[in-house]
Length: 562
Image 1: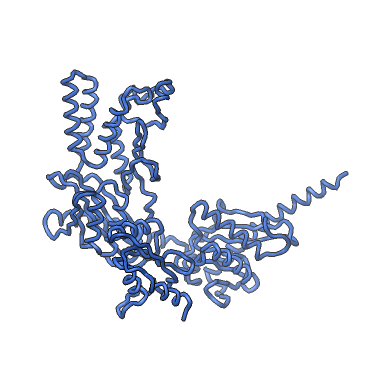
Image 2: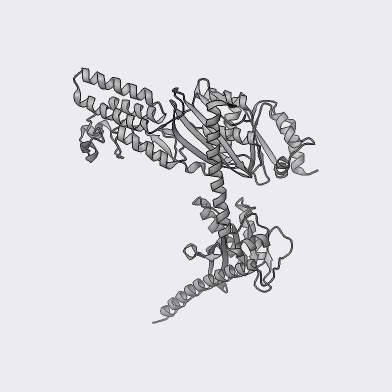
């Protein structure tokens, strides 16, 4: 019996029959799938001892699983929250993931004596309040423009403290003189009054606009009665700006309802989810998210995963959520949303009437965006150079090697050892990305270790700078150079990174997933591309090596002059 299977069988015996989250991992310890269960023992047994009706998706997942871990929690709702957190943090291959989720902007309200309100793409745990994410930047900028025109908040980055105000460290800027700021830097507005204005901004962002309008009107009248006419005029201007903004919003319900309308369009592994935010009967925002469904999950599973991800860190949860169909685990989802909102949230799947029309409108928008995405991908694919597509087919790669990074080493009897890196994008050299390396860790003649050092330094830098890896790594050489590169990649947890070696003498291609060298016809566009890349890497390495050697020889000659 396979050792990993035997180990899993032993672990299954001790799996707790309690609610919690389980993590399935491959041989390298990478997380493949995160799930939750009412009984971890029963759910894990169903994974490792499937019945006759096991689907292809599950079979593919389990063929890669080598280990699992469990985390016990107190309830199913806690398990659901923990599962959503794990998926968002680790992006497992077989869970449904939001694409580029971290790049969506938020509105940040800082926690300061005089808080600032601005757009950011980084949400950090610093006590600030965050609202979003907003996938439509245009709508977000319109919202922030409205905030600026209605509320005279400060836009500076000054660290305003009572001591700074007392020492008169700062002076009011132009915004104060044109009525765009109330001058907190000189203490011309109290922290409590400024804080009340920030509370109004938060209410505005949350869509509580009618309540805000009523509050501003009452405050304006109160100030007028107290004959504080200048302050009343400021509030009047805020009220007028708010009224102008509200008049531009689309009314979808005459009642002052707060609801989200969700829809989902899927095509293969690609998907687009759409959210319409309706606040107080008016559509205030439209958000869309692109999804990647690597695990071929069902529509119900994808919708459930999307709901968990979109509301996991949401500051605002509406009273009602309209859906196109019932998601998986609807009862647990509803309990989780209720606990997060601390009041009842209705999940509705409308069959007729106005609500049904709103869901269909949302779905139509999701389908249009997905069609646009797929069309753009198809156009990009058509623009890919024919030699790149030929090489993908020749090597059996999962995707076209649009970006190839190639390495070669050069030295003279072990001295002046260097390595080169050249980059080809879409079949053409990208010289701005060329790099060279002075070999630091290898003494004497050892091309294999030199190749390993160059590859490791390059990949480490890409990982350090959070940059994407190339579609294909090419090394100049045969089995030895390839093995050196593969061992480095495996040690760095990148055993699935496509890599190939091209030997000069017979133009043989070596790839890790084939036992024997591959040969292609001399006329093959894929082979010609590899040769061009390999030769360019060789040229670049030799040029740099000769330059270093020339400098060394000049220094030696000068040293001999008496």
